Structure formats: C-alpha cells, structure tokens
Amino acid sequence: MIERPRMHIKTFGCQMNRYDSDRMLEMMVARGYELSDDPNTADLVIVNTCSVREKPERKVQSFVSRIVSGSRHGEKGSRSKPVFVIAGCVAEQHGGEFLDMQPDVDLVIGPDHLHELPDLVERVKKGERISAVGEETVPSFLQARPSGPGVRVSEAVTIAKGCDNYCSYCIVPYVRGRERSRPAVQIVDEASGLVALGAREIVLIGQNVNSYSGEGGFPLLLERVSRIPGLSRLRFTTSHPKDFSRSLARQFKELDNLCEWLHMPFQSGSDRVLENMNRGYTRAQYLEKVAMYREYAPNGAIGADCIVGFPGETHKDFEDTMKLVEEVCFDQLFSFKYSPRPGTSALCLADDVPMDVKTGRLKELQELHTAMTRRKNLELVGTRQQVLVEGPSSRGDQMSGRTRSNKVVNFCGKESLVGSLVLVHIEEGLANSLRGRIEESAA
Image (cartoon, rainbow, N blue to C red; front, side, top):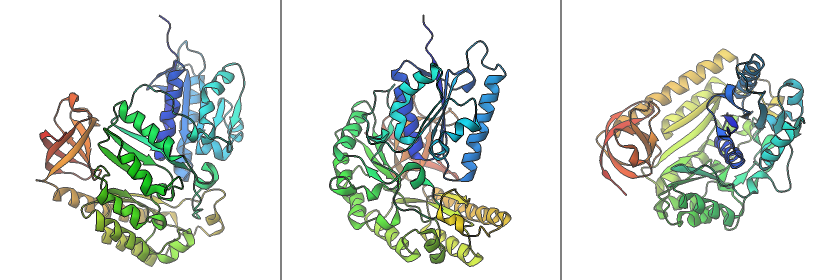
C-alpha cells in the first residue's frame, strides 16, 4: 500500500484565514494528501498567517522558526525535508523577503494565488523557491471550490475580499487589496452545494459583508441564500457600522433561518479617537445602529471588536469606551492593545500611550466584559434554547453546539445528534459557555 503524503496547516487570524485554510486543505486532499496533526511528520507544512497586529505576526515567525529547527534536527526521522509554505497576510506583506528571512521556507503565497497552490508545490518539489503575491486578474476567491474531504455542520462561504475603508490602524487593505465582491449566483451555488453535502448552517464572511456590491446588495443576497432547501441557519460576519442599514436590520425579522447574532466592531467609544481611526461614524451613530438591530431582533446577541491604547487615547477616551460597553452590554467582545502596523496612516501619530497603561486598560475592559457575559449567561439558566449540534465539546466528554444567538452549549448526548437541532434546558451559566440537558429534538 502506497503511503499518502501528509500535510499540516497552522492557521492564525480571522474568519477569512480559516476559510482560506479550508480551501487549501480541499485542494491538497484532491491531490492525494492527508491531514496530519503533527508538523514534524508532515511532507507539506502550511502556515496561514495574520499581520493585523504585531503579536500574531511574531507568533508566525516563532512558529516557523521552531518547525524549521525541528526539521533540521531530525525530528522527522527518515522522512525527507518537508515543503514549507507561508500563506496569508504576512506572506502578502513581506513577499519574497520572507524567502530571505527564512532560508528553509520554499513558497510564499498571497491570498489571491491560493488556487495555484497544488501546482506551485509541485514546482517546489523540483527545486524552485517561489514568491507568488500581488493581485491576480481572477483571484483565488473567485475560483470554483474544489471537492473536499467532507463538510462540517457549519460552513463559511466568502462573499467578498479586501476592504476600501482604510481605517488608520489597519493593514488589511494593503495585504488583502481593495474590496471585490463575488457574483451572487456563485455564492448561492457554493452554499447550495455545501448544504446538499450535509451542512446545516452557512456563515457568509468578508472583511465587511454589508458593503457587498453584487447584484441587489447584501440584504437581497441574504434572502437568496436563506431560501436554499435544507438550510437550517444563516449567519454573517463582519459588519461595518457605517454600512449597516435598516433594510439589512429588517432581515433579522423577515428571514426565519437568519440567526439573531450580529458582529459589529465599534473599536472605540470616543468620537475623537474614532475620527483619528478614520472609522466613518460617531459614538451616537453606532448606538443608533445597535438600536436599529434590536428593533428587529429584540433578544438578539451582539459582538464587537475594540482597540485600547490608540495613539492619543486619554483616560477620558477610555472611560467613554467603558461606558459604551456597559450601555450596549455585548455578548461577545474581542479586545486588543493597539500595535502600529507598517504602511498604515496611524504610523504618523505618536504612539504615546505607555505599554503598562495599555495593558491596564485592556485588563480593566476585559474584566468588565467577563462579568457582564457571566451575568447574561446566568440569566439564561432555566430557559429552553434551540441548539445546533456541531460535535464533541472541547473536553471531549460531552456534545457541543450553539444557540441562534451564538452561545456555546455543552450537554450529554450521542454523537449521532451531530447536525441536529435540539432543545436544551439550560442548567448552568459559565463565563464563556452554557451547560444543560436535552429535552427533545427540535428538527
């Protein structure tokens, strides 16, 4: 029996990177590879990278150095040196320079070139070292999706790539390019195919989904996808506040399978900081969008992103952020310390908030949100929640799924429930999840 070549993928970053990793896996499985959990036994190691902040980029460099060092010191036993691939935003940012920084890296590939991966790997095996970056006329996200090793209960479908907002702190427009939308028919066809193969939930993703410029705009796209036979749930992420419209908010009431969950980053509660960030809205306008969403989804959940320690942020600015968090009472909050990114306009601003102040503000913000989340989860004790079963819990001793409002619920149950909608009686509210017991099947 011929041994199949093994591949390992390490993914850093956002939902777009996770989607790209899935695509790379599908392409390489179609070429005969099998997935390995151990990079030290793999014939192909792909590191899909994020450069939106300094910390993830440092993690990428550290991971690559560690894996390369392991390969040099014989951890792979008798297997030959693997093909090392750097993909994603760091690849696009550094391009061929990465080949100079890491002599053992064989291929640097940007997001627009992912559809070329199998052929490029074959060229590397023949001795080439390749940098494939820059925008393509027909980029990877417009290519037909390859048939893969199966689908999950919840599957993502990208609807657009890139961003035109140029927030002063953000490197995304420089590494993912200007915003480009996929044709609606292609999106619906991909989602329909995934549902036909067993997906129960579709998540439409993009850097800013609600600025989708395809036929009819984003609200109509949601309506078209929601009509796919067999689709139990529909979600989308991420939304930019300045593009969140009433016609979009209304879809939360009109589309039965559109889940009551909105991810809409606010980044700061200070109008002065928001202006310096070039976010395109004020604090009051953000709160108006939240109120609009809750008008159509009164019990809907809302998540956001937030940056503390942006250049010039005063204690008063930070207090405005804390007050906004208290007012909205977010169900989910991703918060970060500001870090300067190459090529962004914020680099011309003095990074004048000391690191210890940034760290203290982040800790205070996260403690506030943790307490609020725990309280909201405790309020759900005694309720019955519809849960889509996704698989075993992270500990492996229970099953796990999510409510329509994106709350993680763990409960005892059989693996045959995966893909089913069940009603769960919530018995315990924890900081980051819920626990309960199944009452009955919901579908």
